[in-house]
Length: 74
Image (cartoon, rainbow, N blue to C red; front, side, top):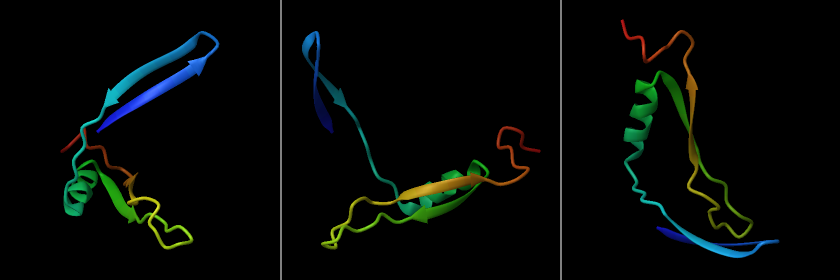
């Protein structure tokens, strides 16, 4: 995805472009990654607008499990 920005301030106009490469994985892959990092994971679905259209895809919330340190595997 290419995003073009125009910034206006007291020094004038500036334009710049940012390129973001994204891809989607199956939900199970995201969940497994959180679990490997020692986190309990929950998917919070996006909410819908008044007309029923989705406002976002949702997000994954990971909470580190007590006593879990993925850098110190024994």
